[in-house]
Image (cartoon, rainbow, N blue to C red):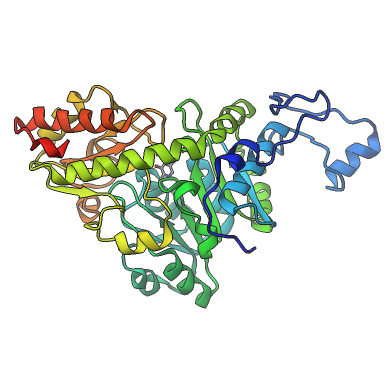
Length: 408
Ligand code: PLP
């Protein structure tokens, strides 16, 4: 599986994997809501169950609307390389759980980042240990910490870069090199970066997981997830975790997400441009303590990000002096919506310590550097100047300290 490192074009997003519906000629893939598919005769049914023909059998095992989306996703993450396949799932968490439960069994171990999406951390910290699968959490900005944490039963090196919520960067090629020496599998959550900004498979990562609820779907109207990698591994995940555990993507959500993918590159271009402008404006603001954006030279992971990312993403985190000021900024925004999630056409702002990362023990949160005054903005596709003026204006109001004019 040789994957090139190039961002998906709008042409690929619009046309990739599409073909007119053979039955009707419809140019948009139809929505197939059927839970079961009829057979022409007994031999066709028997052949389908033996895997000798492509006939659909049952909705949890495969659906044409979901298949069409999977084909598009494999092209986005795999730059159209042969041998790359995708498995769509009911949510991002279903994708992550399906992947880890396929790769690991009782007694196995995972090495994962200290700073990551809160629910993924909970899966690794609380749920998988009940099945005898333990995780060591490491400082993901230092690849050698992955190497030091590897034990005799380690199976998976898990990466999230940029990572929730402070956009910490992990050197993908360095982690892959460590994994190769020991025959381990590297799984990367590419939700924050999106395939527009980063193609982990091109850096040697084995499996990419996504919350398609975010920028891939992009409209905040459908929960979905995906795993992408070589077709043998994807087949194993489908067989083990999707068919049996049942975290299958609903066809209607597949249709909504497929429609979102058509504008994915256009949306990502606008969101990334706004995020860079916002990060620069916040960095100049006198009442902002720290700004986290991998595109800023001040970000500790900037050099690695510049090497492995083609754009720096739509998320910006920044720290103000206190919880109270942070809350006042949230409440002062008018264009940017105060809601969790990210990657939406709307810009969104959240307060990680009291929402997405509230389930993390306080000490783990402090160790991950998530301050009470930390806010995270996911830039949408509104006009750049409207988003920047809204956040900087709310900040001025919350701190009663107008920023210099040029800060806008
Ligand atoms: N991975 C990351 C980085 C996320 O931010 C999220 C959700 O916010 C998930 C995975 C889980 O995705 P879902 O909500 O679709 O299950």
